[in-house]
Length: 288
Ligand code: FAD
Image (cartoon, rainbow, N blue to C red; front, side, top):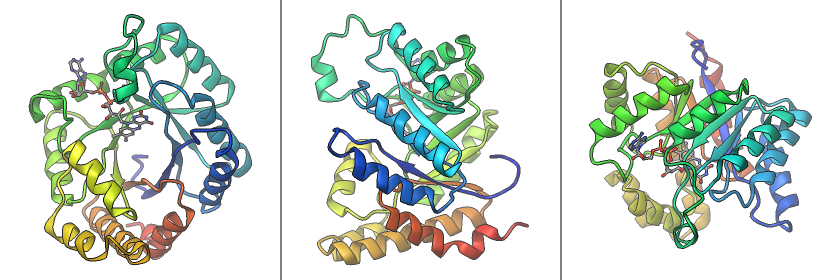
């Protein structure tokens, strides 16, 4: 990142159960064969699938030599658990970590919080740094503001602290209106946050699911996007085609405006990752 080159990367998620492991592994390998700039593997808050995150990341790195980012959350963890995870990541040869707080799921909220040692991602970043692990550390950022922060000012102030604690790059939450990102970039650059920003793009293939999650996260849905969902949302094949086209359009506009690093939330769907990559073949190889 940050050498002026364009990057196109993909995110995958680990299986939630043993039985799903092989199908997820196959899907992630198909994505790896596209030879993206890097891949990231998410982490189940609460740590239930933590070993799978590492297994998937390690497998792809070893077999396909694709640079990997392993996500790590801390929301319900003890210091000991995090220390163990960091050790396992080191042993697995992981070089890049996306350090996150994690979402408070209803199951976690019901649990016993007395042993929780972390409040924010910054605490995890500090512990990773203190552990002496030589990871390149990234963090999350929110072009529309994080739901829990009172306003954008406050959110950006916290982000600045996170970067000062050791975040070397930031990946954004999904957004569907590029102007929101441009205005956010202006604000964070103005506050002196200069690390590379990786724009997170969600190709919408399951309309109902995404509209629900956007409502929950407060993500703005432009009229052009809503019209596509209203018209094609009930037809999976048409929705997939339109979702890939919308994401492609968004990415071309970002690249044209100097946002060089694009991360596609490919949700373990190799055909979606491949279609987007194929749509950008000439554009990604065009360096100027
Ligand atoms: P933080 O940086 O801790 O921020 C959370 C809130 O706390 C913000 O409102 C912030 O302003 C505030 N805050 C931060 N620092 C302070 C402080 N010092 N004092 C007071 N307030 C503060 N979740 C998963 O479970 N697994 C994943 O793999 C995963 N991957 C993700 C990848 C990306 C790119 C993104 C954008 C999100 C991902 N998430 C994942 C979801 C993420 O865990 C949630 O959005 C979570 O609510 C916030 O995580 P964070 O790391 O941004 O938290």
